[in-house]
Image (cartoon, rainbow, N blue to C red; front, side, top):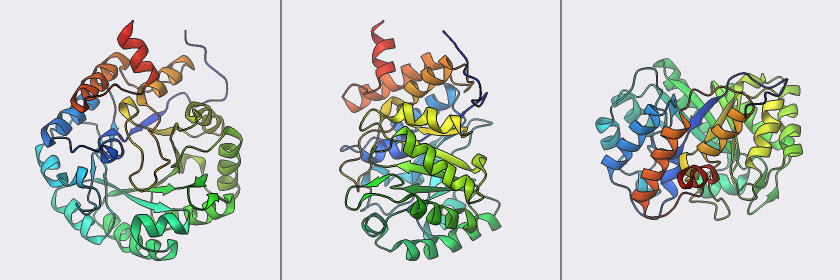
Length: 305
């Protein structure tokens, strides 16, 4: 039953990250043709932003070493955006050569994770991103900024809100159109989410430039999503079937499952444009390709009913 709740957005954009953030954490390398089919099925289900891959070095994330092959093989659907994660200027050149129109950069709110993920300090990573964002903008590309470890870090513990706001503002000042706030290890709670978003707004960041990216390690992803919606956030990251984690943070379990998010939003009367039955079929198909069941509660419930 749909029971709308006053004060929430009437529509939410789901930023699907399964093909990139989901598959990068798989122990096995998924065939390029399977990835292309996965992306196509997600688009057919009504998702309009599908992050497809990353131009990180193959020795860092071998699961995404076929990025160029995938982009050449993919069938693009009108009205769908296919962002690609790029870590540096070389990645941007590859993206431009392949006709990519949307890119993302991936920063850290903490020093330890910045060193482990990018082999640079936070300040050095921002210096690296600056020409990437500027170059992308010069060529008419949209740039999204990811900020990881916004709530907790497995090495540093709880992360101060003002620290997150400071780094997040810098990413936006570089020219990112949107900032996705990541709970990389899933330790965030609703009150913390609200406090962080309020701090960004108090610092002069419009809420429509913020997105949220929750992991469900402690089962808090949907509660945290509701807290974000109550503050006006209308872009939520999710991964079909709950795929993913983070290869550089052992405590990072799966992303919020797109199916669970769609079911949740539909119950609140919030439009997404996603066909849930089609999406569930897609995640069941991908689970079969991976040889294990989907961790999504909605996928399990609808596939057994």
